[in-house]
Length: 389
Image (cartoon, rainbow, N blue to C red; front, side, top):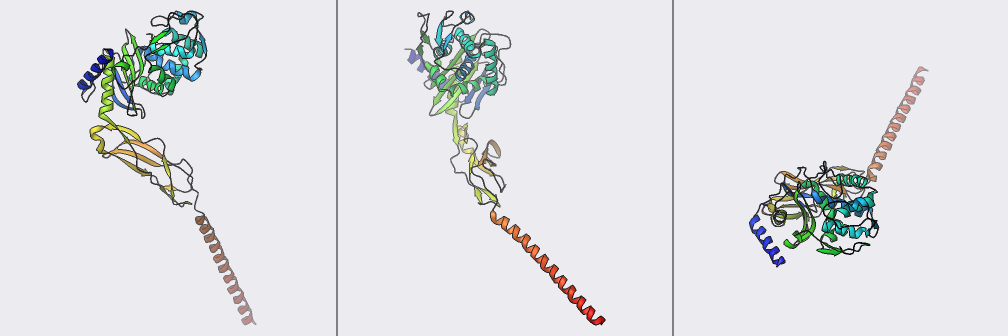
């Protein structure tokens, strides 16, 4: 019955959404994961409390600095963390892996603090690591003061920043596997009455292409969600902040991204670029990054790829900028990808020999001319002396 309800909700959203997402969230964003391209945005850079979406960044920092089999000992501070909890007991030992399941499936705040203290030495030091990671990901409008997302002054993010964090999150195989699970049974040293961690995300049940990721709610933040979906090898990331219908908003954006946007990839071979005065006349080139973009389906035929080579003069080094591959729509450049040389090209040796031969010939001619002048001068002197007699 629950699965049937999920299918009915999905079908209702598909029929209702049409070509434009019907998004009621205060802030929302849809991102194509491979390219980072934004497909839909609504107040995407508005700073808002992210609630438990914070835990995506907590998990990212943890997996980068801790082994999954390490044992974590719960402190008094962790145990006393309010709201959503896995009911840790002071001194209880749980592995990093199982704490991550509790963090991401049940959204356990005590797990967040236990992990933060284990990895950072203190919650405060760990939060600094979180903010540094956010900046490294390009999340410029994010500032966090705790690892769980409970409301606090100066704890904020944006839909765009959360999409960047979710994109990085889904690139990590361990985290991707965790959020795709409906439930998990943890192993713990003390509290044997609370072992089942059940995923709070309804998105996994409601949408056939869903992969996860994270729910969030506090009264000031409202209902929040960061979701990932995969269809035919394409992954989309959707984020909604402060939404009265977070699952419907998410599915509406996903359907818009999968149905209305199609990928464009450059399949033509890259023509070697001419090198003036080189050992070889041309050099092979490669793309600095894959030529991939998504465009509205009904406009696909209006786009074209164009090569814009530079004029290269030998010598040319390996990985030298050689021009650009441009995605054009009419006269407008939509995307520009640098071309780099795939080999080095030295100056043509014959050019050097000709230069030295020219100098040598010039020297010989000058010497011959000087010798001729000396000979004429000698003859002139002899004649002058002869007639003086």
